Image (tube, rainbow, N blue to C red; front, side, top):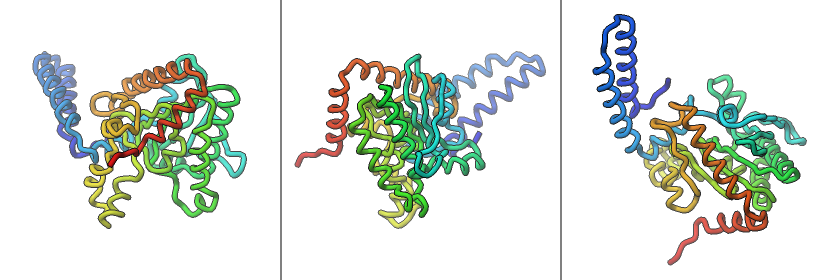
Amino acid sequence: MQSWDFEKPVLELEHKIEELKTFSSEKEVDLTGEIRNLEQKLSNLKKQVYSQLTPWQKVQISRHPQRPTTLDYVQLIMEDFVPLAGDRLFGEDRALIGGFAKLGGRKIMLLGHQKGKDTKENVERNFGCAHPEGYRKALRCMRLAERFSLPVVCLIDTPGAYPGIGAEERGQAQAIAENIRDMFSLRVPIIVAVIGEGGSGGALGIGVGDRVCVMEYAYYSVISPEGCAAILWKDAAKRESAASVLKLTAPELQKLGVIDQVIPEPEGGAHRDYQGAAQNLRAALTEHLTALSSEPIENVRASRYEKFRRIGLFQE
């Protein structure tokens, strides 16, 4: 498994424990006490390392190549997923998936960015950077959800919308703007969860929700740390400073009132425990869907509008 510099002491100790277990099994030597002591040391080390992460280190975890993707969560916590393809205007975009699914027996419309797990799949999925046709497909799915009175669940994981010439020629900015506009008036509940990267307009294209959640080691920002550093300091190497001033981590966003909930992750991040991360996500989504389903839809829509109007208010 790939690791970042700050994780190396943890991985080294994990490797040592595995070696001792293997040696104990093969040589039939009782090393239970030594292994127990090392496991306690490992637990303390994990708490120390992951409780002191900088914003940039959390960004690194959000980008981990083994981090669970939208389709991983579909497999782990949803049933009867029926994917829908194409925007009926240009074509299919594999960077943004959509379709019918069930979550805890409740029928929903699922939307989510999809990254790859290796270079080949990342190229096919465009590294999770959607084109205009992806956002138009998402809007088509949302309108279907409205027609059938299905709540919408959006899982965000993208560094941003694709900025290429072709995407601009096909109306990237307009597609995102239309999604944002129409999501405010959608007559069904919308739950948004940032499961990895939540970058710029690429995230906002499916990011308007009645409840907006961010996983513990995910980030949600108007721009990537590298992009911010390049603009403010003309030096992308200052990305760590940019990550700190952007206030892009889940606890900071909750404190500012930008999001509603921080979804906890297993110790060390979602990539270390898919099942644990999936169950935490499932619990949050189910809780919010249940709460919103009992509210009159006009009240839900009005609250959605007011929720976003309050972001960024200040007093002199």
